[in-house]
Image 1: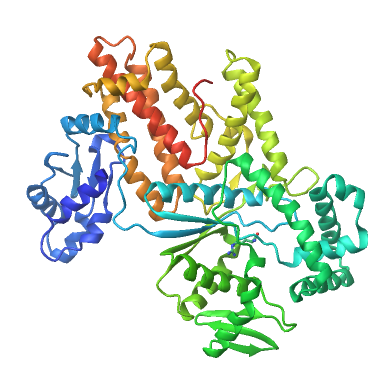
Image 2: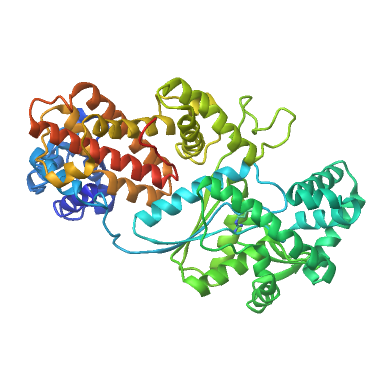
Length: 572
Ligand code: ARG
């Protein structure tokens, strides 16, 4: 059950006539400090104006009118007009007792089950994936998992860039500088080499190469048999390499509908826009103007080529026909903000106005020098080598912190720690900000890191091993939960928050709401572990109650980590 929603609903029925319910409800939140109780309603200050009453009087009036039983007693009026809510200990204990045997950890179906397309990762194939693709992949995967856990139908779509100018560059490179033997032994490596070579020549101002590569792209789009055959030959290798990386990262998709898939639809998209009077000719190109935005949205260039924009319009049309989604999320670098603003505006003008389209933007990963993360030679950091390095770095951490594990086990744990550290470091950020990539920080054993989360989980499991019992045995015993120690109560209140946290993270599309919560829970567990003896508790009842808290904490941390795409291990 969602405690926050319950409280909001109860307050909603106790507000005076004419009060702005949604504003009041938005100001009901978990308390920032446990001195103020467990939840707070801070909406009385806002209501004061519209009702003509003093905030404190209003708060007293609402406190008298609201019925929070059995969840909580009468809220306390504090400060200028805050309402502090303290959950009832008996109620918490009962709710936890139920949670103990609930596989869903209290999650409930959403009020409305939405169909949501998550467009994420979407790399441009034929050039190797690099660190820039990490964020879309990690954030998109986590959001897809969170939305599914919240009860929505999620379609994970990898909108590959498999039809763009980079393919023309490779085609030109292939025709002019290929190394067949290299291609035979390492096809993706050879294609990457060709891509880099051509990109460099274009960067160095070789306009003839640029023009020739552009023509190769145009020929591919026009159906030139040689270029199509090469495309068919290269693609399986590119896809294979991507699959390997995704497997390693534990990321999957429901569909891989790349740009090439939409090619047959592009001409009719432009025709339709023209027929509807939306698209006009401008300097030889076909464009759509959007109110309030100066730059035209180009759907066909003067040379007749369709664009990234045309493809995105065709994609929206296809998704609407195929899945009728309620929401479409684009997990893409914030530098594409202008493109998406225009795209959404044009799509709405085109008739797709009922769907909620959102650009889930994110910032850049920076190096220690606070500039975009590069290797020492100034190249972008390849994703493959980054993942390799994570295991090496994590191995050091594991050796130091878990000297009791045998080396084989240490290596296995290091892979899990390394991947967890990379993902967590990305997800715990406010996604629109840039962040600095720092192995040491992201694998700190204490702090808001994946490593800390994984250690906290392992600790919950080691208690069961030491106590020679199992979580299953404790669940089956259905112990009474005691909340006499403040540290027990603090964990309990956090355990009950999981459903609301997942709902908030899905509404705001922010995985960091979940990481913050898991960090809080891990911290509360650490205090509990120091202050409350579990295996040496004063009685069997107390021991079982505390073991139940360990079990619930462990399950919540593991489930939460799972929603971040992060694995845990029982022993580290
Ligand atoms: N391939 C693009 C890039 O690497 C991202 C595509 C995002 N999705 C979309 N529907 N435009 O920049």
